[in-house]
Length: 225
Length: 225
Image (cartoon, rainbow over all chains, first blue to last red; front, top):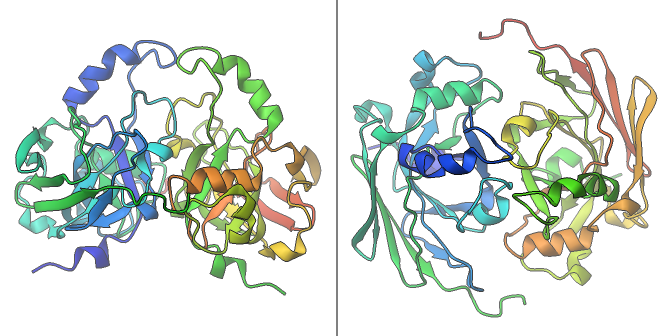
């Protein structure tokens, strides 16, 4: 029914931090302290490197060693063609479709440091199960997003609560860098991240886009160490 | 004489911040303030996204609009095979060779924010001119690195001044993420970054590795805006 997701979404995985209003509100006090003094004026981006790519129905390895693992339910926007300096009004013309993303992370207590270590462990970005073309999504800004852990609802929000909507994100990012066909914008995870453990079944559901399922597994003990 | 660089170094471009002793020293006072309270204990990584890839003899577009452009002379370490949790003692076995990198950036006054906007403009990571196999480099930790702008020396340092040497970097990074064949570690730029302007010829020379040449050009006026 749609082109296979993993044949299309082959590009860079761009994360957008702080893109849910509730999350930004929780952080406002922090942003009034040094060194920021004010909330971010532009999207705060991070990269999920290629080693983080993961799929529907695949395992996600818990880091172990006392580290904490948190799922990151998010709407993924898959670019359909190269976008450089496009206006918000035209931005959606550059989108191929939408998918579900689970942007796993170690907890981040601050936004002070480049987030590679927290966000770029192997398999830390599950994408899927499929690419839903834009024509099949009436309004990407009114989608329910739900995280289930072992069948229980643990996070619930709506893309209506984005700080920046999809056209704004594409316009502001493509102002300084070219987005390419196959790149994926991970439009942010809502507030209230939860911890998961080896053995947990973690599911992200977005209305109309399906449900992305992953299982957390324990680190192989002693591997290479 | 060697495999073509751009057929081999096709992977992720990992930047390492603060990896020259002089640079770290300049920043120490800042790291004693909140929110850090202490200098970083682990390598501070950032990503140069695929749109930043650029080559020897190619143009680099100045961002214009009052922004400042700075070259970032750096030794590039090209991985030869996948490395997960390798020890420092074995790390160099995973390296295919070395090359010259010019990691262009807007100035960063702090290390507080993810650096995508400063570091990931199109063409902001020149790599080349060639891949020099490890066997041809007696000691990668005693290479002179020099930045020329219009033929004049503007930065001069040595890889002897790394904070973390190449085996340490590979060991510490591969501890939490797999480095793949073709990935490039950009081992840091020395202190004293300079500003460059449209029309400038920018060259990075590393002893034994050659000279990477790029020309800064003005932004196309009015493009897409």
